[in-house]
Image 1 (tube, helix red, strand yellow):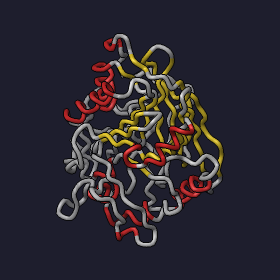
Image 2 (cartoon, helix red, strand yellow):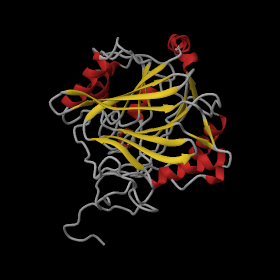
Image 3 (spheres, rainbow, N blue to C red):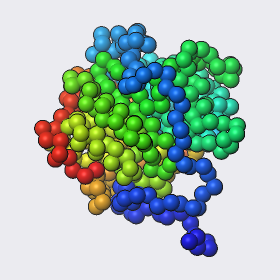
Length: 378
């Protein structure tokens, strides 16, 4: 029963996931946060999108240089206070020409609060007018949320840019035109010369939700991913998080664990957003070293989420370790070559001051378990 004066349940300090099992229903909300139907795909499964087919020059440059550079950001929409999104985009633009990324990968919540088409000019087109690389994305919960079902369908704003059957310039972009993309589906796989990036769509409910069809697709992508290239998994709702507001998702840990158990393939890196800060978390899944789980949900939304634990904390519920956490705005730049996946985060405070943040390097070699049943509980 609702108790007078009750507030939302708070996260247990030190833990990396919100609850040990099925998420309790939360009556303390007025939002429509139920599971939303997906739009019709543009193509057939397995919804793969090859750079060599759609961006031949980009794919050729990656191959010739032996290096892939990509910016990663999430939770960017500056709907209530655009200055923080502006600080981040300014720094992304200033970095062009020094180590120009081949593309940007957005891990969701492109536009707040309900992904409305009308919000794309201010929160997307105008914001990234001078950022020239292509921007790929998976949707977040706010991209899929719907306030008024009579006026909006889930993901219609996201689809209008990222899933155009015949890419063109949307009139809503006005003086900041950007040609749309023809991504095959809200969940899809990006094929590049140096890495395979599997992007899930974890829908609207808190802590995410996927159906059996997407679970089968995820398993198939793990099973069929190029065995000579590293595998990166991207999803909006994080598997682990040490923040005080959302925390990590047991539902998404189950989805990942099932895919690993069924295939023996372990991602080299897991990227997520949803939580409005930056965290690099490690979890031992396979012999040879930890798997990094990186939360990059600090791309511009005005309200940051605090972190409840210090760097070095090992969560008693999952044994995941918070290696580096920072409550700042910013973005991540990944550089992948034939030996390593290197990362460098850029941090930006409330005044716009920029500092160099987290730096890391992990082996690029594909990870396959000899006994997939030995996977620890995630």
